[in-house]
Length: 196
Image (tube, rainbow, N blue to C red; front, side):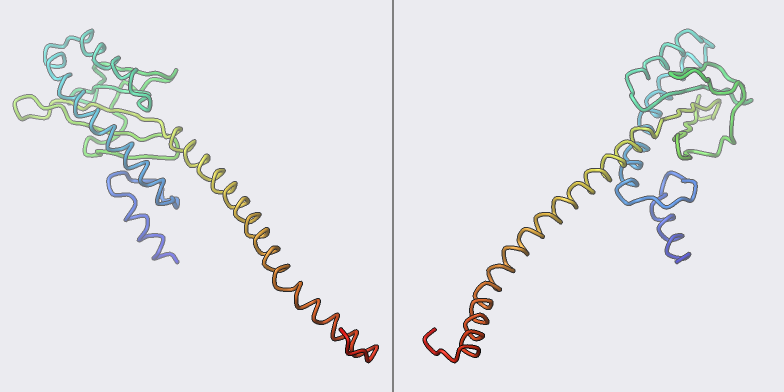
């Protein structure tokens, strides 16, 4: 069993390192789609934020990050310089990302039960000069999973009721003639009357 879970974890966590808990295959597809979307948004933002980053234009960099308000799952973003110090921070939630780089720069994507964190390097003339960090909420993913479980349970109950109705009908269809035959046989045996 342990080997099976490890196999599934490795298979499902292709670009996102989950916390080791077992995930359903559909959840992996949704999380993979979310990861791909956030990676794409990160690439676009990283390409666009390089110029303000080079010229230390925090206002323009902040404006670029504020465009993330239209991306429903991305809740936080930050640009860190090569020393790991925050250049500009953006957050849709109360808590901001820290002023120092929160994890090593070689981490490209990771996730826990609530968030997906994506890191994109910022390149200037081929040299890595900073990092863009995007934090996406997994709340919608959890809501989708809960909705799917509820719908699955409702469909199961409807299927069970439908199967019961069909089984009852077929039961009556088969047992009614047999019951009539048994009653006729009992009447013949008890009354010795062969005029049935």
